[in-house]
Amino acid sequence: MRIPGDKSISHRVVMLGAIANGTSVISGFLEAEDTRATVRAVRALGITIESDGAGGLSIHGRGRDGLCGPAAPLDLGNSGTGLRLLAGLLSGQPFDSTLLGDRSLSRRPMRRIAEPLRRMGAAVETAPEGTAPVAISGGRALVGIEHRLEVPSAQVKSCLLLAGLHARGRTSVAEAAPTRDHTERMLTGFGYAVERSPGMAAVTGGGELAARDVSVPGDLSSAAFFLAGACIAPRGRVRITGVGLNPTRDGVLRILERMGASVVLSNRRDSGGEPVADLEVAATRLRGVEIDGDLVALGIDEIPVLLLAAARADGTTVVRGAGELRVKETDRLAAMEEGLRRLGVQVETRPDGMIVHGSAAPLRAARVDSRGDHRIAMTFALAGLGADGPVEIEDCDNVATSFPGFASAVRALGLEIEESR
Image (cartoon, rainbow, N blue to C red; front, top):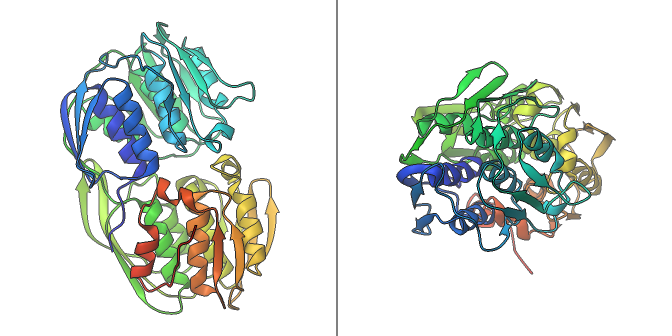
């Protein structure tokens, strides 16, 4: 099977293409709700973007200082990546802008970007709760800062690096645990100098970006559902082609291998500065493991489906250091706890993780609330592979935010799935 293009890269290529000099041609762009929201926002900033509706874009960049003030607030829908990265890009512009989102995005923390942006000299205001809307007053001169991430977050890191493009001097971001480095790779690809060392990335303001053509690889986070699903299925094998294997995001592969899965990589290659390969995995008995530290940071979005895999493993799995899951589209740890309990799984929760007591016994048929979170919905859809009856998942509209056509992809692999409204 093939999977949709990488969401993180799709967001970033639209933003960097917009501020590059010249026209960038993109293939493999993820045509999903989140990424379309970023395209709409960038168009509202005066950038012409032509789309063929099938993953092809032509972005007519106007240079680092070529954006125009929007006529209305920019609505990023459910996209935390879109909102936080655009906040950095817009903080040094000469015009005012306001970024907002849907009910779910409006509950997510924004002080983590607002406070360091203010240290750079930006005029950034949030709602009283520290959430969206985020209002940015233009015309402020930014200065570079040194910032250390308190919580591992590629979105905060990327926000500050993008703000640093318009700042005087050097902007550096240090991190205790590695986070995805798509922004650093893509800036380099667009010809902007990025200083990098272990645990640190920095840019110096005032440079220019040059347009380039980019082929977006398949999204490893989307592939994770099928990799884990293949492991817990009673039989069968799945091969997924053209998946991005960025080393700051390969935690799901390392964790599955630690649990006893055999993930075979073939046809390794490079696409736009990102490593790519085909992945193959077969049904197997997994074993419980301990997951913490860097492995959690390298696979934070995949922890929900790994918790499902742990429920079907032999022994106990312990996850620590995953407190960031409590401030995603929903509290993903709470959603997983509730759903796994309904499926008959013994779990114990912690503020930053979970203990899952795995069993070879089938999961029981149940009705699960995804709480409007696309990753929770897709995780429990795969639970049907190991259940003794139907698993019904509520509130699944947001699956389209990252994986349009998910139900069809699952159905093509032999899992009976029905959609209803």
